[in-house]
Length: 470
Image (cartoon, rainbow, N blue to C red; front, side, top):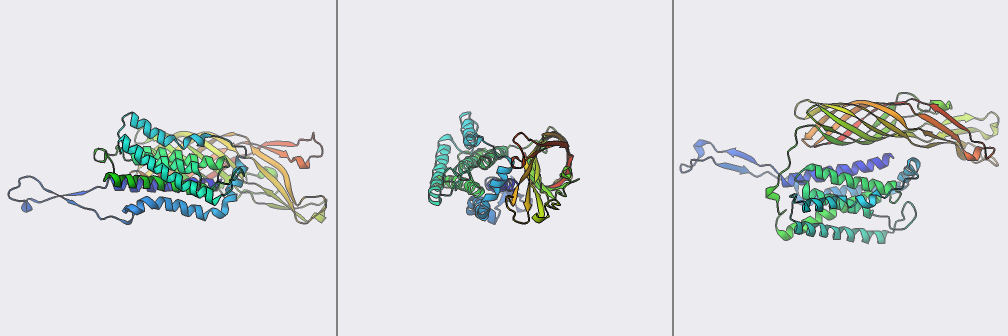
């Protein structure tokens, strides 16, 4: 699951870059210098202004704006090609029965929203005819790239159904439409861009959760989607000779100054006790991770309501035992799969500005912790007739339980819309864990050994958040 979350972080990081560079392009500030009275023309009694043209940086170059985010995605796809199996094993571990068709529809949501706003006369970057032409060109480019690669590479899908997995067409369509929304309405309010790319990210995650695509497929599809829309708008802008029909009439909606935010986080999780202590077999939980999304809506400068959606997982160290009844087997290694939960929470958030660029936040949340099913396996040291070298002994499943969380963070704001936060939080829950004896070890069909016991789950999470303010 950590690899799945890392995938989403890459998606959001690239979105922030795309959004930021386009905003810089469209709304580059100019410096005004008042000419002193001694330098005025005698014939001119009014103030004169001199506008100094700013020098472009590397990231302001048009080729960089168009190609950098897709290049990051393509590079990530290539680097993860050799690890395709790992994300599938994690997915099958945590959510083996997940099936949902939301990604079939969500891929079109940003485009539907754009056309809905156009019909409602919400002014965007372009008029309706030019919007249709730009979007249509983007879709043609995306379709040509995706289908030419799909039926040339012929990569088998994770579920084994067909051989057209790479790249992900759903993800490419979702990011084409998200970039379309960003182009048309991101210059009006950054919330449109956040909404579009968030929807595209969930579409991409859905392709993995539904076991339809490998991780490199999704990363490549996202890069193709962004690149296609960038190129589509590039060519149509050249055709029209400008960068939008309404550019001169639009300006960004100013925020209300409240620190409302949406963030993606990744950090370490340190258990306050051995979470597998119930087993009494020497197994111990090691340093784990937590990752997910967090956000809050502030009704004033200091107080707001927020929540989180996050995963927590702790690997479990194996333990070596000696079977006294069968010493000929040698050592028996007991291996336990990672123990983890999906955490949901909601509660009050507090914010305090520390100057222009620093922000302190604190929160107290309550919610639910949904446990992930795991297995305990044995592995014997020597071959022995009639006994498998490795087999499942028990399965375990923490029941859903109430959880509480308190935490704080300190954020450095790069500018008014983006910051990097260091956070620390304490999480507590007390689920009941059910242990079931494996069917292969039952002496009779009627035997069903089941043990249930409560176990305190509390841990300290420390890490970083990429935080977007709106």
